[in-house]
Every structure is written in C-alpha cells, then in structure tokens.
Image 1 (tube, rainbow, N blue to C red):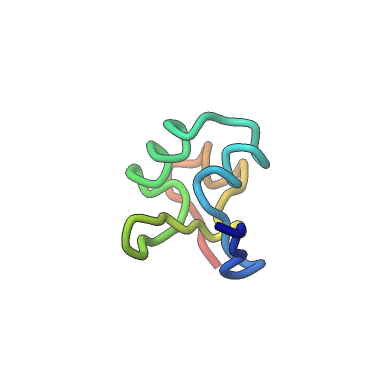
Image 2 (cartoon, rainbow, N blue to C red):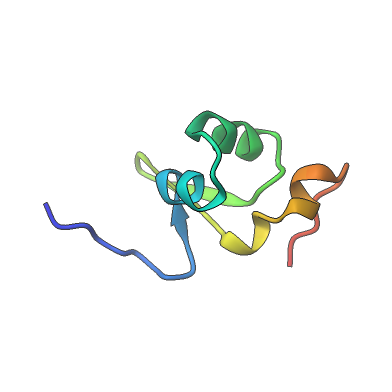
Length: 65
C-alpha cells in the first residue's frame, strides 16, 4: 500500500515522534494529558503540528491557536 499523505498540516504519531525525536509512547502521553492537540480517525491518530511546541509541552496550560 502506498504511503498516503492525508494533509501536510497533520502528523501521524510516527511522523511526530520522528520529527520531534521522542518515542511514540511520549506522543501518546502528551495527547492523553492534553499537552498536544490531535484527533482520531478510525484507528489512525492525527496531530496538529502547531500544538507540538516546547511551550505547550513544558507549560501548565498548553496554548493552542
């Protein structure tokens, strides 16, 4: 199956972990804790790249655009 790019404005868990150099478990934890913004379509999790910032990860309350 060909690699489908759903949108250049969204990352999968795998893409986010590679780009930010963290594990998939860390990405899952950040999503669960509300540190980064994303959503699920079927079995696929998509993440908004704008929410994956150092400020959001380290602050008490993440700031989403």
